[in-house]
Amino acid sequence: LGLKLMSMGFFLGDDSPVIWRGPMVHGLIKQFLTDVDWGDLDYLVIDMPPGTGDAALTLTQLAPLSGAVIVTTANDLSLIDARKGLQMFNKVNVPILGIIENMAYFTPPDLPNKKYYIFGQGGGQRVAEELGVDFLGEVPIDPRMAEYGDSGQPITLAAPKSESARAFSEITGLIARK
Image (cartoon, rainbow, N blue to C red; front, top):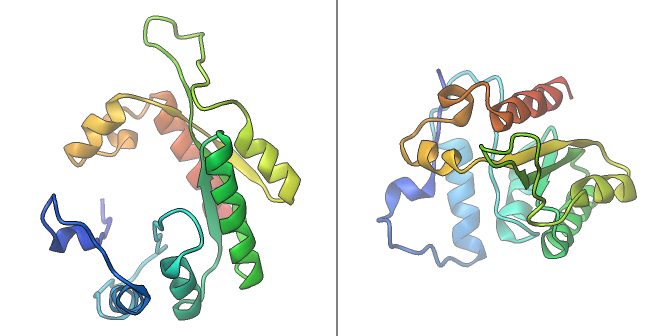
């Protein structure tokens, strides 16, 4: 597929926590950006922890970011973090490409027309409208995603016709066009 990947997880055991202060986080992000031989890339996607911590701030200082995508669930606590992250990127002049609502709903296999909104409904859309950014879409819960992820298969390849795979494809298309 040509997908290149780097993770701190490659250097730790499964039970090893990463307990680092700001300067160490800064150094790791700098190393990942400058010392990894990425070769030619179409995109560099960096998955960050929620909120406005050292990692996000360091990244905005070290790399010319084309934009940020905020991922949230519909529940209020997640939406608070989403708002804070969005405001932080605004303050450091990183364009917000939009908001994605993850784990938006669950559709049981035996009831394909039923949607259960386990974490609430429409929170990502609501925050996007409140803050004047694009809502990029919803990704539903698919229990197979954990199994596929554990075996190293993205759902877009393992089950390309699934609702989650279609959502990922549509959303990545929107982001790429931005």
